[in-house]
Length: 366
Image 1 (cartoon, rainbow, N blue to C red):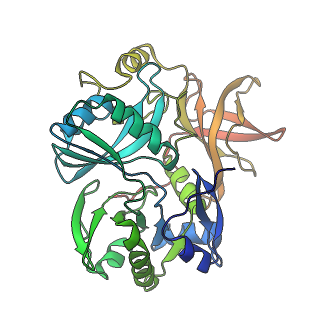
Image 2 (image 1 turned 90 degrees about the vertical axis):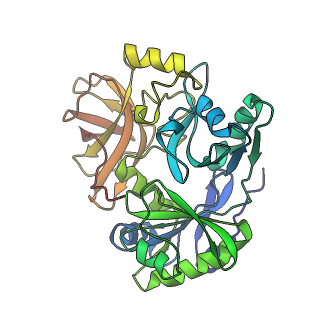
């Protein structure tokens, strides 16, 4: 069995009594002693939480025309943003239109794009871009050059300000500063639905920054938060997770993330097949489900209509700590409408659910 990789904060997690598990090939904290998933979830929704997400990939694309090259490969249109801004985008398979990965592109300038893909897909994204890159453009895997620490919640600005870090810049923008003599990227991004930041320190600077952020957050009732609450938070928002709502067999059209596709661009990987699917209409579409009975739907469960016919399948499911009911995301037949009642087959039991459009909770990211 392959040895799990560890972030620079592994020792911190052990000291905090974290329950650790494999996530994308990395040994990551799922929850911490004392609060658990529910307590950590509430901290982010109501106060502030600090996450280690250094397992996320990092890559740079540099050289003359780097941004133009990336724009010809990934789905979203980098021409919509300027230097110092970030953009959610997708790397799709050219022949199928399926999603290799979803990622954030940070535009530093016309010759420098910084990418943050998912942990397990970093190598695939880098390999595809490197294979397509023309002479003069360099694609570099920088997975362990940077850590990533997310600070999310209504008190996130105050937590950063306590360290003298910049706050208040526009959503999906970033600034590069120095902290304790080292370079630090401060991004107004996140994956929780709450106002917050993602900070990218040098890998070996991450422990000192983590300690300082955690200490500052405690004044506001902040907690360290593991990937368990990260999952309940993103599911309440209806945010896609690669391997569940997105994969090589699921296209952006089916996943309802066409807003992250630059349809008017002349070229990007998968363009022809995606345009055709969009025009014809997808065979299945992403939607949300809220349980009407006691019970929690999970991933990979059949969804049935009133006649008992299978009309789709769940992709994620959890107990919503905010709503106090079971919720799920799924891919359903387009004929199933918002407001319809369906049933999820949960271990042989029929769980009634209402079809809804995510997010399940109010958003306050900006």
